Length: 500
Ligand code: FRU
Image 1 (cartoon, helix red, strand yellow):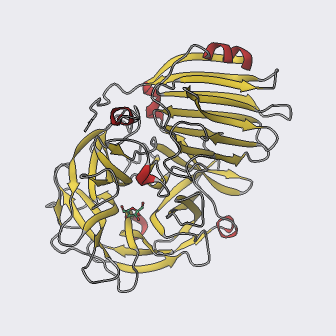
Image 2 (cartoon, helix red, strand yellow):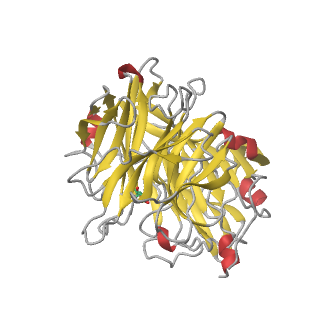
C-alpha cells in the first residue's frame, strides 16, 4: 500500500500529530478557554525515539490545532510523561503573583556505561498560555536512589490540606508525594503491593475525586494505573482502576477494588490515559483522553508519515452498581456539535434498517442504537468499514450475553500477530436495555455500551475506500427503539499529507 494511502488513515475527528510518532497524552490542562493537550512525541521519526512534548490546543476537545513542540530534551534527559497544572496562587513564584502554567514531567537520562537509565522529576513553566516554556533552573526536583522505573508524575492541588499532591509510578507500585510549592516534595505514602494487576510495569497513574451518581453528597476517589506490555499477556498494555478514599496522604481502596482487578476498557487500544486538570468547577466534568494504541504493536501500525492518535475525549463518572462504585466513560457532549444526521429512526425493525444502510458510504460516523434487553433479544452485528473483502464487526451475542468487536478481517492485520482478533465484554445482570454508541473513524472503532459501563476501544486499518455499513441478524423480530446515524465531520481538520 502506498504511503499516501497509509497517511489517509489519519482520523477525521481524532487527534494525531501531523507528522511522526506520538504515544501518551501528557499535561492536559484547561486554562483561559483552551484545553491543552501535550503528548509524547518523537519529531524525527515514526517510531518511539528521544521523547519531546508535542502540543495541541482546542476550545472544544474535538478540533485540535497543533502548536510547536513545547519541551525538548536537555542535559537532564529526554522528556517522558507528566502533567500540567494552573498555579493559581503562584506558589512557585514563577509568575510574579499571577497565575501561570507549570508542567511536571519525567526526565529520562541514559548514562553512558550505566546499566539503567536515570528517571527524575522536573518542572517547566509558561506565562504565555503554554506558547513558550522555561525549564526550572533547579531541575530535577525529585529523584530516587533505588527505583529504576520512577516516572509519570500527575499533580493536583488538594484543597483540604492546601498542598500539591503528586502520584508517581514506581516499578510495581505508586508513590504519593506532597509539596507546598511544586519544588520541594515529601513522600506521603505508597500504594500497590498485594493489590491490583502486576503483570507489567506500572505507568501513568492518576488520582481524582468523583461524585457517586444517584447518591447526593457522596464522593469517592478514583486511581487509574496503566500497566505496560509483557510477553505473557496477549492483551498488551492496558489500564486498571481502583476506587476508594484519599485523605491527602494515603489512598484507602474499597473492598471491591481489593477483591478484583477492574479494567477501564475492554478493547486493546486505550492506554496511558489521564484526566484534565483545572476544568472549571462550574463545568465540573472529569475529562479524560487516552493514547489509542498498544505497546504490543504500536511501533508497527500501518500509518505512513504519522503514527499514534488519541481516543475521543471522554467524561468519566462513577455509577453505583450492586453496591459497588463503577467507573464509566462517555463521549464528551462537544462531539454532538459535529453530527450531521443521516438517519433518525424510532421503533425500527432490523430488516428495515439494514435495507436503508445498503447504499451508504460513510467515513467518520456515530451509530446510536438501543434495543430492549429481554430474554428474546437475538444476536445481531453491525459491520462497519465494509469493502474490498474487509469488515469490522461490532455485535451482541445473545448466547454469551457479550458485546464484542471483531477486527479479524478489518483490513491490514498482518503487521503484528497479536493484532487481529475478537474482544468481548459481558453485560452485567439486571439491565433492561442494550444501548450502543459506536464511533467509527478512518482507523478506529470506539464502542460505548449502556452509558459507558463497558467500553471497547480498537484500532482498525481498513482500506480507505471501505466505507460500507451493514446490519446482520437471524432474529427476524429484532427491532431497535432507537436507531440514529450521524456523520461526524470536523471542518478544521488539516488535510496535509506528507508523501516522502
Ligand atoms: C507509557 C510510557 C510512560 C513513559 C512514556 C515514554 O506509555 O512508557 O511510562 O513516561 O511512555 O514515552
